[in-house]
Length: 369
Ligand code: SF4
Image (tube, rainbow, N blue to C red):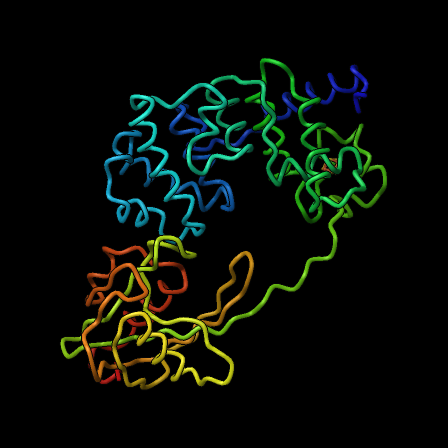
């Protein structure tokens, strides 16, 4: 049974589309739409704020203006242009999908929903967003913003972390979708969630859905979407060796492809085990990863960083090799590089902070002990 009366549904559609036409932001991915550009923007905007994605999108497109240019680029180059955006699997999947499009679709982005879904990294949301915006498919794209706005609109009492509640919102979004205008409608609901129906202090007085919104009527819209209490995320202590040679070069290692942050470079190290000092942890990790024995010296800095499923303190210590030559035992590759040469490699956010720290040190060489 439909959740909305047909006249209410029409009013919800019209009021939202009118509001969007009047107030939509001028964003680079809205200017010249091609399937490739729509896809790139949708992938970047997952997990990334619009303000941050904007510059990355422009730089990425400048370097990889076509699917072909992305497909033939070395992965290292793609990761470098993603550096700092996080969730690097997105970049690796984008690259692999471009290669698949070249191989199986002659370089043209596929039109059919099943073919879009079959691209690496494309789930239900991205397929619906790209399908509706680039090809006019009647598919409702439900991201976090849409989940929030629609669950407030009907004051959904189900726990939104459960797949059944998400399926309820998807069904409501499908019902609200105006046939033939899915692209504009999807974008409008996402924009509503991003600018008006915000997680904190939603601006109900300026919302086009205000007259029909059950959460606004309840007087406590922030209570929605209903979420079960989050479990506390674990906290880890991780050691990193700033191993420097006589020429002032640093040893960096590339993470294994199938690990978290796979393919990125880092100052080698790993998680502290119970009962270990940080110096012992770094020495053990470098022995296991690179088959070298190091003497660990002074503490350089500690960087705190939050990932989606854990938080970490990364403790960086200077170190020197006292025995052995590096071998890639438990890493994909390794290099000795100067601080200037580090720009050629893609690092995660925490390691970039270490590089900034090292660059700010006076170059006496005395510091690196
Ligand atoms: S009226 Fe308020 S709670 Fe309801 S959809 Fe609009 S901003 Fe969100």
